Image (tube, rainbow, N blue to C red; front, side, top):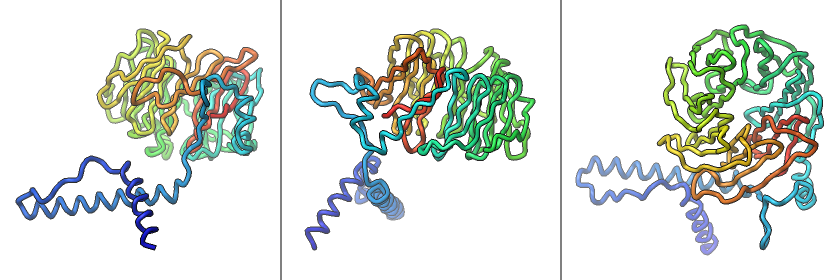
Amino acid sequence: MQAREKRLKRELNARAQKFAVGAPVNAKKIADRKTKAHVRYAEELTDQAVTDAALHEKWLLPSTPGAIVAEGMERTYRFQQSDIAKAVDVNAARKAFDLDLPHLGPYTVDFTPNGRDLLIGGRKGHVAMVKWGSYHLITEVQLRETVRDVKFLHNGQFFAAAQKKYTYIYDKRGVEIHCLKDHMHVHRLEFLPHHFLLASVGEQGILRYQDTSHGAIVAQFRTKLGSCDVMRQNPHNAIVHLGHSNGTVTLWSPNMGHPLVKMLTHRGPVRSLAVDGNGRYMATAGADSQVKVWDLRTYKEVHAYFSAVPAVHVDISQRGMLAVGYGGHVQVWDQALSGPKQASPYLTHQFTRGRVVRDFGFCPYDDALGVGHSGGVSNPIL
């Protein structure tokens, strides 16, 4: 019994090492009694928090995420999706699907915050909501108008669609709820879930924030940098990042009428950008065929990767995987944000029959990749 307790204690200590921040403070060297008591109490709280985190990880996260591992001289980026589907188990193979819609694309995609539903919007007006995992169709509607972007609101009950002139709100049945006439000629939408704010930017170069709880415009700012079609939010602090045609990225908050930060990232227009879940790193893709990783704490470049042609979209998963799309290719880079620069991608997938990538996104809590292209929607196995 004592040997078992010692073994469990060693295992718990090993798990707790990665949650510990910094070295413990030696309170014996502190002369003042009151300060010594405060330091000891803080150290006890820190030790308890580390122990609780280790226990929660043990019971709530019993298995490590899977990955494709190559043997010998093989390289994972050379594996084809057909070969991967034959080697994985049944549950993993079910995640691979290809929705063929060649006449209604290209498609944009979006996931609910919990990763249960998938929303797709075709350029020619086709909008559909699908239950992720089971691929059960929830709703499907033909708007008969150009759709530039689609975005879920706080849950899967409502979604917004940036159409030819105005932005509209629909419910999960595809019924129109609101017409937002203040949001005209919108190219990109973002929803801030903790603030219930719908942000938009488009042809006029005006960034607008609309409160979806009472329907009023809370802020709108002229970027003074022309038309804008690149916008993402920082999930950590809800700061909106805009990419412009002069190669700059500006950071905006509804409380300030001017950019919080203005960064020169590329020698040409910014095509796409993404921010990781911790708010530490930002990836940008420019017309100069460069994909760069930036540290948002210092606003300095960390890595720069070269793409064969200018990338049209980038995204970062919850595990820190970086996906880059250009032409008919999608590359997935593992551990590309921090640490040493990666020499080769983790996976590469090429679409056939002339399909061109338009948009993609990682599914929350799953790291599956939903890709919208000119021929429909696909989900390669990662």
